[in-house]
Image (cartoon, rainbow, N blue to C red; front, side, top):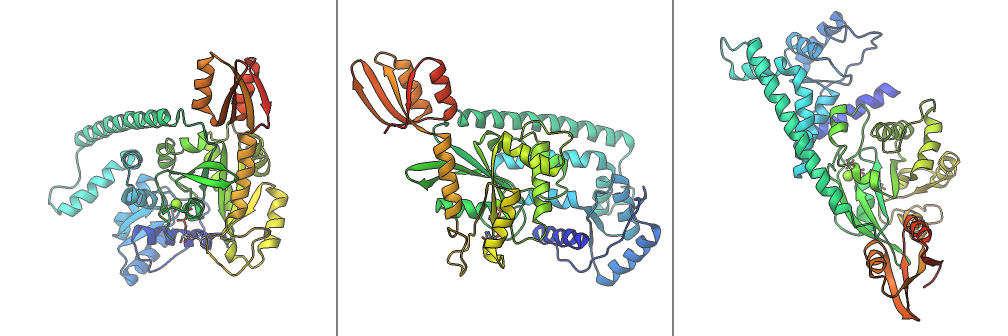
Length: 429
Ligand SMILES: Nc1nc2c(ncn2[C@@H]2O[C@H](COP(=O)(O)OP(=O)(O)OP(=O)(O)O)[C@@H](O)[C@H]2O)c(=O)[nH]1
Ligand SMILES: [Mg+2]
C-alpha cells in the first residue's frame, strides 16, 4: 500500500535525522482543515498517543502551513515538523562544502520567513522567560527585513560560486561527461566507486551525498569518461531546496549523458523514477517540458533531448534479474542492470556487476567522440591550438605542408570544422 511506503520513507528520514520512531498514525483526510490539517478529534487522539509513547517530536508526512504547524505544537505540546522541515534539517547537518552550506542556508531562510512568529515562540520557550512571549510586530518586521537581505546576499554568493564552476568546466570538453542522477539511496555513489575504483562516501541513509563529485573513469578500449555524482531526489523535496541546489545540478545539465540510477529492488521504483523525472523537468534539465504529455510521453521526450541511460541497480536483490531486465527494456530501451555488491552469487544477464554500464558508456563515448583525421595547413597555428585544447589528440604528423592530427573529437566540433572547410576523415588512427 502506498501510504505504508510513504510512512516507511518518513521513518527512514527520521532515522537519518537522528530521531527514534516510537509510533505511527494514519488518517484519511478528504480536505485538510486550515487550523490543524487533521480534524479536532484526531488531535485529541494524537495527544494521548504521544503522551503514552513519551514522544517529544511529531513528524507529518504532508506539508503543514505555518499556522497549522504552530497550532499543532500548541495543542500537542511537542515539536512538530513536516517532511520538508525534516529534509531541511538533514541537509543542514550533512552539508560539508562551502557551496552546499550556502545552498542549505538559503533554503532554510526561505522556509523560515513565513514561520518567523512560530520560531520566536520556540526561542522564548527555550529562554523560559516571563514576558518573553514572542516579539511585537515591529521586531518581526525588522527581522523579516534582515532575513530578506541575507537571502539576497546568499543568492549573489551562490551565483559567484556557479560562475566560478562554469569557468572551471570551460575548456574541459576533451572528455565526454556523464552525470549520475536518481532517487536518494539508489546507489549512485556506489556506482561511481565501483567504476572509478576510488573511495567515495556511501551510506545506507538518505542524502549521503550533497555535493557533486567528479571522477575520471576508464571505460575500456582507451576511452575515458568524466563521471559526476549528484545529490539524490525524494518525493516532496522542498521546493526551496530544489531551487537552491540548482547550481549543483548544473553539472548534470552540462553532461553529455545522464545515468538515471534506479533501485530495482524497491517495489515503488516506478514512482521514484517519476519523482526524479519530474524534478529534473522542473529544473529545465530536459529542455522545455511537453505540456500535454503524460509520464510515458515525457520519458520518450527526455530521451530525445538528452541521452539517458536507465541504470537498474541492486540487481543482486532481484529474484529473477534476467526477466526483470527484459521487461523494463520494453519501456526503457536504453537500460542496463548493475550491482555494486562484489561477488554476489547471481548472474546479471550477459555481463556481471557494473560491466554492462561500463560498456554502455564506451558505446556512448565512441559515438560522442569519434576518432578522426584532421588535416591542418601548416601555419594555421590557431586551428592546431584549438584542437589541442578541445579534442583528445592521439597523434600528429607533418606531410606536404599539412599537419595530420588524429584525435578523438566531439561530434559537434567535427560538424563545425567541416562547415569551416577543414578537411576531416572519420576513422583514422
Ligand atoms: N544490495 C545492494 N546494495 C547496494 C547496491 N548499491 C548500493 N547499495 C547500498 O545502498 C546504499 C546506498 O548507496 P549509495 O551509493 O550511498 O546511494 P546514493 O544513490 O549515492 O544515495 P544518496 O547519496 O543518499 O542520494 C548503501 O548502503 C549501499 O551499500 C547494490 O548493488 N546492491
Ligand atoms: Mg550518494
